[in-house]
Each structure stands twice: as structure tokens, then as C-alpha cells.
Image (tube, rainbow, N blue to C red; front, side, top):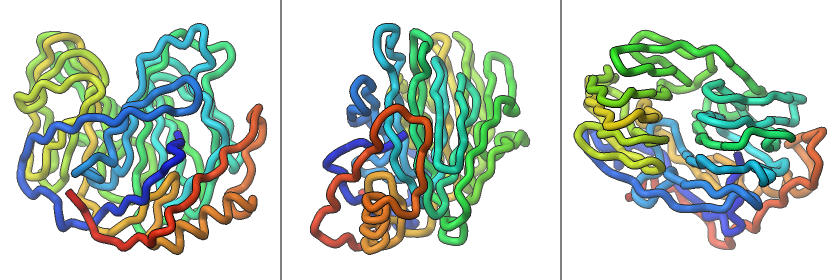
Length: 321
């Protein structure tokens, strides 16, 4: 999924200067953003005061939307660099195409993982015909400097490991949770998991105290460490936790995101993650001139033009609250 904001702001994130080194309960409210013609998303990261959770640098939650008489998701070809995109669905389907030649329909609780590396372009759309409802999340993982120029590639994993407890099924999307490891490729220590809770469940989920964590509420009514978290909101939890208390008042869906605090300072603008202002401007120029990012074949429509980069030069400042 792309950042389609035509007034895309330069964002500096990363660095450990503002990492909370102890458990906290910081509730993040979303910013509503229009994605294409018919999809509105709730943007949780980057958020005012919280730019990253581990290497997780971007989180959009969308739906459930009734798209029976709508085109659904329609995101034209657009570029990425320096990151991985994670497509995660609870309902509906998304057809992924990219400039490496990948063509894949992603279905609920299947992992669509695109590593942009040095440069890639892709499109996302609801198939024709498509299911009535569309509900999911799109996330980005920042690549560390040692791997941010890798060859672009796409992975699809229909079968993922699970951790179970009475009333809880945790599907491991990326990384490792309680000894279960996703087949998805990662480049920094992190975890992403989908948590399905049955009504009335009370349980504790084991965590790594060295990671910082956040929980995105997808559906239902749940309390995370005693805090009610409504669908479309995110609770930042800080570091230093060995376990996480969960309580479901109804059937509920959550996403657990975590990882070692990301040390490097990043410049994130539009759909690019880099290290300097110059890098970002060069990437935009390459996309607009048709260089470097390849071609998405088979999409019925024009590709997306990049917005203008602000005239002011960005200077890295680390994590900013």
C-alpha cells in the first residue's frame, strides 16, 4: 500500500534517544487518510509523538468496508525503497503486482511480504469480482543500512505458525513469538503477530523484555494491560515487559508489533525510506523519469506521480516526541 497523501511530509524517525525503556501505556489515536477513490485508512504510525515501534515505521488500518458495489482498493503502481511492506487481511482479498514480475492474490491471514531493497514498484487492487467486505492492515518495516540496498523480492506465505492458549490463537506474521518463527524474511530483531481472542478470555502473552511493543486493535472489545483498546487505535507499551495481560470482552482481533528499538536515524517521505534529504530527492527524480524502479505490468491504469518534495532540507533528529 502506498502513502497517497499529496502533501506528503518529510519525517525523521529512528534513533534510541526517545525510546521508553520501561513499560508504559500510551494510547495512540489514528489520523484518517483517503487512499485512492474508495478506501479510507486510519494511520497509526507515524503518529504525533511516536514514529516507530522497533523497525515498524508505518501502520495503516482499514475497514471493515462494504465494497460490494464499490471498486474497493485501487492503488496504482508506485515506488518504494529502503523498506518492507507487510499486507495483512482479516476479510477480503488484495491482488498484488510488482516490478519483479510477482502476481499474487493475498487472502485473510496470509502473509504478503515485499522487500523493496534498493528499488521496487507495485500496485494493489481488489480483484474483480471481489468479496463484499475488506478489512486489514498495511505495515512497513524499515530496513537497516546493511540491507537496505538488497535486491527487491516478494514472498507469499499462506501457512504461518501459531501459538495457542485457552481462548487465544496467535498467528506469527514475522519474527518469533514464544518459540514459533515465521518463514518471512526479516533483517532486524522484531515480531509481528495476529491475536484472535475468544469472548471472556483472560491470558498473559509472553514477550521479550528487550523489545518495545505496541498493540493495534482490529476488531471487538479487548483490554490490553488493563487499557480498553478500541478498533482502529493503537496502544504503545514501551520496553521491559516479560508478558502482556490480555482480556477480551467479546471476540476480538489484535495485532502485536514489537522489536529492538531501531538505532539508525531515518528520513521517511512519501513511499521512500532513506538516510538523507539528497537520497529522497534522487529517488523521486528516478521515479518521475522512469529509471530504477522498474515497471508494473498488467495494471489497468496509469501509474502514480510523486508529490513535490518540500523546498526545505531535512536534518536528522532521531526520535521526536
